[in-house]
Amino acid sequence: MHKILLPVALPHTAPRVVHQTALLARHFHSEIILLHVVTPLSYPAGVLESGHDLTARDLHANIVKRAQQDLDQSLRLELEGITVRRLLLKGDPAREIVQTARDEQVNMIAMATHRHGVLYRFLLGSVAAKVLHHSECPLWTDTYLDQAPAGEFAIRNVLCAVDLSAHSQQTVSRAAQFAAEFGAQLTLVHITPSVEIYGPGGSEVLPEWKKTLVDSAAKELAKLQEDVGIHAEVIIESGDVLRALSRAAQHAKSDLLVIGHLPSGGHLGANGAGYAIIRDSHIPVLSL
Image (tube, rainbow, N blue to C red):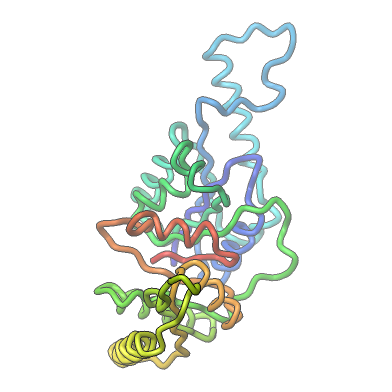
């Protein structure tokens, strides 16, 4: 992992993601490209002062100058000892992040995502969602929080979500390599369709149906592990994917969730399921 792209929206720097990225960079001896994108709406406080008659060009120059100063001084303590290249660009943040990842051939993008509802995502969009949709680069995401992390972040338990698609072998193989790199325990989780039926008396689990689905998934997961050459713990859940993944993460005491994506469908997956997993996860998500 030679290069990690770390986009920041100054002055907000997402302390948790910065903390995690620093750990990864120190472990892999990576260069961090610290990227800030100036948008047309990036009006920093203090630029417009009473009595100053600024033209649009002057205003833009002040915005860029202030942004460059902020970028030059940001995260010096947090990224101490790491090779950091600071890059200031102008334009649409999502587009510039994706293009920079391609131009620089980075090995991973690390960024924060906000927990907004479906209405917000569809009406206003999200930089993280757009990057997830358009980037083919592995993505490390975590929920944005203002406060600094309570303690040192560590990767001890890795949970890998397996959908048993044609791309599962690659996802599991890379998750296993990542877990081995940190000496972490790897757990595989597969979510089957719901095994409940609903009627006048409420919901009811169909035991035979559940056994058939679980047995079939267990055989496929065993074959998958044999093909990859690993032996991992296995959790098979059913029903709502987000709730099932949350239960599995708690059960395995996971520090990191690894999910796969289709090359043609982006990291979001069908109907934005990938974004929902990333948005609602309480632990970092590595989308491969």
